[in-house]
Image 1 (cartoon, each protein chain N blue to C red):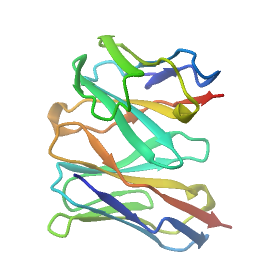
Image 2: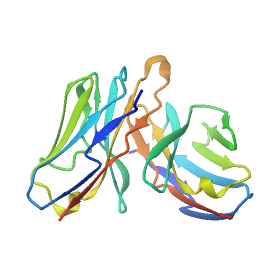
Image 3: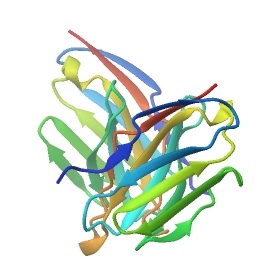
Image 4: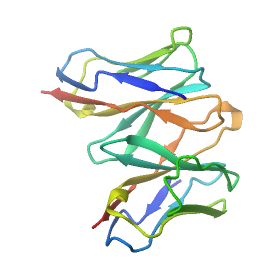
Length: 109
Length: 115
């Protein structure tokens, strides 16, 4: 069974702080996805990675295949970053995603 | 492209009624996924299709749930009869694994309330 664990469950930060959200998974992957769910409910794919690091604006995602661990970093956090961040593991089964429970991030001005 | 389209956006129904949720994937995508999101269980996969064929329906909770994909541009998720515990947000997503990409694009979701 593929288990995906995220930490922390809830995170509160002051504007400008550096944010890290962690994700660990139990089996080998073909890709690790990071998703963002806005307060209105829409889900957007942020990153999909199978090795190394990816950067998009203030967001950085890293993955360590040997340790089965990924992190999502937000530099210079802003209130508009407030959302639920979900990691998902696309395991050996083509296409299917296994989801973590999400991290609720709140950034105060 | 308009993205993944779902309808209706909100549905309120009474226990025992049939509910049909609809999804139009992004043109050219060959994978379609139905997900359910609840506070208790988070996001969970119900079923997914590849080239209109159901590949994995192990997440479908019981026989009251059924899903079809009659063609590449349309899918339905049906609940009959509906129960209050089916209240959730149902998302449809589509993707293409061509070139090994596989990013999933989500629809806006259908918020279902069963009274």
